[in-house]
Amino acid sequence: MSPASRTVPGGRAAARIAQWAMVGAVVVIGVLFPQVYGQDFYAVTIATECIVYALITISLNLLVGYGGQISLGQAGLVAIGGYAGAYILEKVPSLPFPVELAFAAVLTTIAGLILGLPTGRLRGHYLAVVTLGLGVAIPQIALNLTSITNGRTGLIVNPASIGSLALASPVAIYYMCFVVTCLSVIAIHSLLKTRTGRAFMAVRDSEQAAAAMGINVQRTKITLFAVSAFFAGIGGDLFGHLQNLVAPGAFPFSLSLFFLAAVIVGGSASLPGSVIGAILLVLADTQTTSLPGFEPVVVGGVVVLVLLIIPGGLAAVPATLMRLRSRQGRRRARTGSLASGAGD
Amino acid sequence: MLEVRGLKLAFGGVQAIDGLDFTVPDGTVTALIGANGAGKTSVLNVLSRFYQPQAGTVVYNGTDLLRLRAHKLVHAGVGRSFQNVALFQELPVLDNLLVGADHLGRTGLLRNTLRTPGARRHERRARERAERVMEFLEITDLRHRRAGDLSFGDRKLVDMGRALTSGPSLLLLDEPASGMAESQRDWLGQVIRRIPDEFGASVLLIDHDMGLVLGVSASVVVMDFGRKIAEGDPDAVRRDERVIAAYLGED
View 1: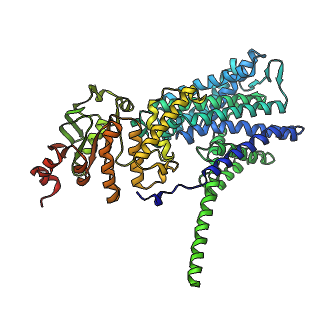
View 2: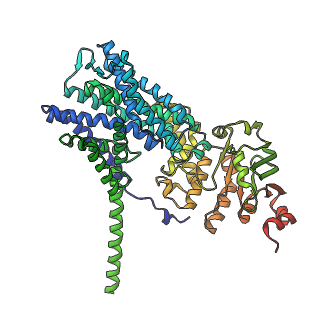
View 3: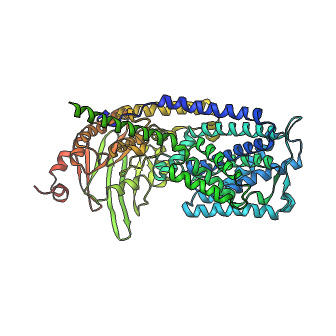
C-alpha cells in the first residue's frame, strides 16, 4: 500500500461551501425575481416556465442520469399530470391546491408504474421505443377521449386556490411553482442520499453486482419509473397552470426531446445541471419566437455547441476547470523546476 | 457449512462443471483452484445464482441456494466479489460499500424521502460498517474517490470491501489478488486469513495464485476440466501427483 499514490483531492470542504453558496444564491434570486420584475408579466412568465421545465427535466434526469434508463416520452407523463389537475379542478373548482397537486402526481405515478412494469425487462433501444410510443400515444388518447379531455380544444385550467386565496396572477403562479419545485428538489436530493437512491445508481452501474448486493433489480427499475413519473406529474400540473390550458397540441414529441436535451446539456445525474440546462434551453427557445420554424434549430445548435465544448454537460464545468487549472499548475511547476535547474 | 454435491453445468456441448462435490466448513478459508478454464468462476456464478446448473445441489446452513433468486442470496448470508470487478463506478468508494450494507435497511421510499429516524439509523449503521471494512482493508483514504477512477488493484479491494460490508457469513472471493503487485498480494493473503476471526465469515477463495492460496487456506479443492482432482490441506495438495501433473507443472 503506498498512500502517496492515492492521495485524496483536497478542497472537499471548500467545494461543499461553494455548493451551499450556489444553492443560497439561486433561492435568493428565485425569491426576489418577482419583486424586481413583477411588473413585467412576460419576464415573470418566462421565469415560471424555467422553473417548471427545470422540475420536469429533473424528473427525467432521475430516470436517465441516476437510473440509467432511457425515456423519449416524458411529455406524455407531463400531459397526464396536466390533464389530471385540470380535470379535477373543473369538477371541484374550490379544491385546495395541495390536493389537486397530489391527485395529478398520484395519477401520473400510476401511469409510470404501468410503464415501468414491462420496462423492468426492456433496455436500450427497446425501452426507447416503448417510451416513445407512450409519449406519442398520450396526446392521441387525449384527442379522442373527448368526454374527459374536451378533444382538440383541451381543458381550460382554473386558477389554483388555497382557501380563499386564488393563485391567478403571474406572480402568484410564479411563487406557487417556485415553492413546489424547491420542495420537490429537496425531496429528490434527500431520496438520492439514501438506500433507495443508491439502489437506482447501483442498478445503473452494474445490474449483476446490484443483485449480488441484495437489490431486486426489476423492482428497483419500476420504483424508479414511478418516482420519475410522480415528479413529472407534479411538473405537469404546474405546466397546466402556467399555460392556463391543457390541449393535445401542448405535448408534442418534440417536448419530450426538449427535456432530454436539457438533461444532456445540463449533465446527467446532476440536479443543478438539470436546472441550468432547462433554463438555458428555455431562454434559447424564447429567443427564436421571431424566427418561426427555427426553434428546433436553435435548441439543437445549443445542445451541439455545449456538448462539443464540455462533453459532460454544464454540470461538468467546475470539474473541467479544476482539471485544467491543476494541469496548468503542474506545467508551471515543471517549467519552474527546469528553470531553476538551468540556473544552477 | 456450504455443501456442494454432484454439481453439473454445461454450456452447449462444453461441460464446464462435471459432477463437483466439496464443502466449505464454517469459520475457515477454503480455496478452489485450477488453471484458467478449469471451471472455477463457473462454480462461483452457480453459487451466486447467475448460472442455473443442470444437476446437483447447493445447500448452505440448511438453505437450498438453488431455489433462491440472485438478490436473495445476500439475505441468506452469501456475499461475493467479482473477478472483473463490477463496481458501481460512478459512485464514490464509500457509497459502493454502503450499497453492500443497504440490504440490512428496512425503510422504503417514503421514509427515505422524509429521512425518518429509522432511515437515518440505517444510514448511521451502514456508515459504521463501511468505515470498519475500509479500515480493515486500508482503503479509508479512498473513501471519496470515484470508484471508476481507481487503479485495478484498489478496485479489487473496494469490490471485496463491498462484499464484506454486506455482512456475509460466507464470502465468495473471485481472484482477489489478480492485478495486484507481489508485495500487495502477501498483504492481501494476511488480510483474507483474518476474515473469519474479524468478521465471522467463512471464505471460499478462488484464485490461481498458488502462493496466495496455499498460504491462506485451511483446505484446498483442485479443479481440472470441471472435475475435482484433489482435495485436502495445502501440504497434501502440494504433494498430490495429479495436481502436480495437471496444474503445478512437473519440475
